Amino acid sequence: MYTLYSQGRTINSECRDQSEQIIKHKQNLIKKENLANAKTLEDGLVYIGEMENEERNGLGILIYPNGSILKGNWINGRANGICRLEYSQDEYYEGNIVNNRFQGYGEYIKNNTLVYKGEWENNEKHGYGEEYMKDGSIYCGNFSRGMREGDGVYLSSNGSKYQGQFKCNKMDGEGMMFWRDGSCYQGQFQNNDINGYGVYTYPDGSYYQGYFLNGKRNGLGSLMRYDGFEVNGEWEDDKFYKN
Image 1: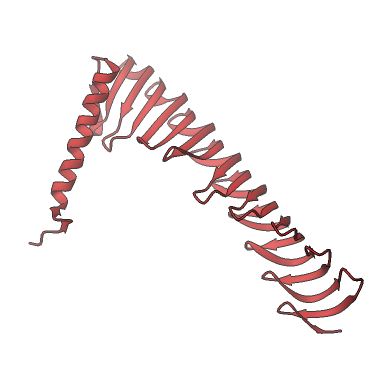
Image 2 (image 1 turned 120 degrees about the vertical axis):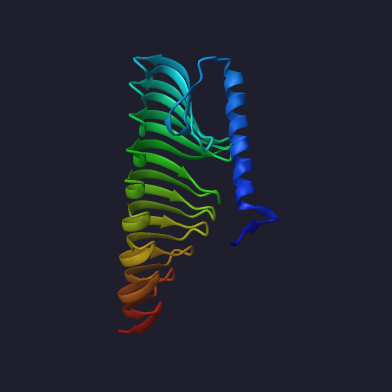
């Protein structure tokens, strides 16, 4: 028989410590809420609150075996209305719940930082919402089944801005991109990059109108320089190839 160790402690010991922490957390919560009608349910669930017909009905708190806490209104044993689900002290969802599922408007917070606020459907981001990333970038727009889909605006932490269509969390379709140096692009995107036909304007006023592949000029296109000089023809790997 083999024994697994993690930082000098057995896994069984670590699980036991976690269980003891959860039990203490439950006891402290019951004491804090000053409610004597705490009831242990199936699968280790603990409920504190109003009951009717042997089911959770009215305001109450449900404590899960893993330590998560769901506070809010209950109808026939299911959470309904404005509720708060606390995964930990630093992570929680607060918003509308229908039959135990995120539905309607809600906000998801992690590490005291707003991560997402917007519409939900069946526990997934769905509809209009705003998503905030760790690196400071922001997405505002449409979601479908948990993914960025449709029209939206993406503000990158490096100062660039994309406004246009998304597909499966990526810039895909017609859109516009603006960079901090003053350059901009309007046209087709695919797989998070400039792909297809569009117009790229440079900081000095020069612009290229034509086809792109993976962010580089490829195919037929015209470059109009700021001094009026024009280059027309075929491009390959961002370089002029032939007339």
